[in-house]
Amino acid sequence: MRRVTIADIQKMKNEHRPITMVTVYDYSSALIAEKAGIPTLLVGDSLAMVMHGHDTTVPLKVEEILLHAQMVKRGSQQALILVDMPFMSYATEQDAVNTARLLMQEGGCQALKLEGGAEVVPVIRRLTEMGVPVMAHLGLTPQSQHQIGLRVQGRDEQAARKLIRDALAVEKAGAFAILLEVIPAELAALVSRLVSIPTIGIGAGVGCDGQVQVWHDVLGLFDGKSPRHAKRFAEIGAQMTEALEHYKADVETRSFPTGAQSASMEAAVIESLENEFG
Image (cartoon, rainbow, N blue to C red):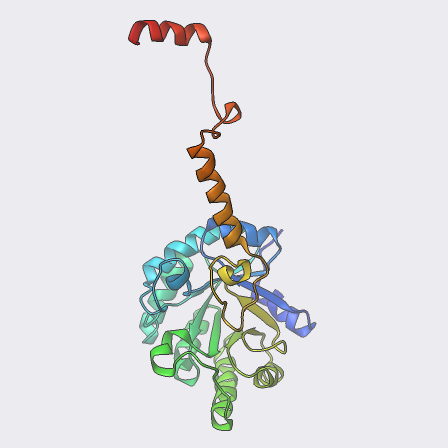
């Protein structure tokens, strides 16, 4: 089966078929997502937090996300793979070109995602002119959290107007899709009607053309309360802990391994060795 393309994603919007996206970070998660039939995979800079243990996405380096992109590429044969451009890796048009070259040539992805509105239009235009598919990211932009905080964006009329103008601007610049994060559902639905390209929401309501969620949130891998925009579709973290507890108990009681997990040799051979060395 051929790989999903941006044309396929556009067709899904045109036909009003919801688009599913999930963040993945390595070979095994890509394999599982592929088996589940997820059409779009995002190697998100959220891996800085959920995989590397940082408090924000800001410390992530291009070389680090490149490594994860390569893992995901090896695990996925069919999905459209997008990779986040890390903080300050597209500060200038030349920075963006250098980052795109590395992530697409060595990472093997099919598209890139970057945060920002009108201020990154020149970067989006430059990349798309060079054949790089770009997804824009508006609303709550985590790379700017030290500046804007972690709160709902676009709630007042002035902020909403800016977000709409930004959406129209990034579309005109050549973005093939827009990720809308943590904005009012009504605003997200309006933006989705105003632009002709797909919108992917996270914490932006059901009116978007598709949805993206973080792998660890979907599977319930971490203890504690999930973000408001997330839904735990399973409690895999608890199951993993339980499995490891059972493993530890079996080791300590010598009930593991059994003969089923062990190799054997002829009794005469081991007897000869015991007589010689024992």
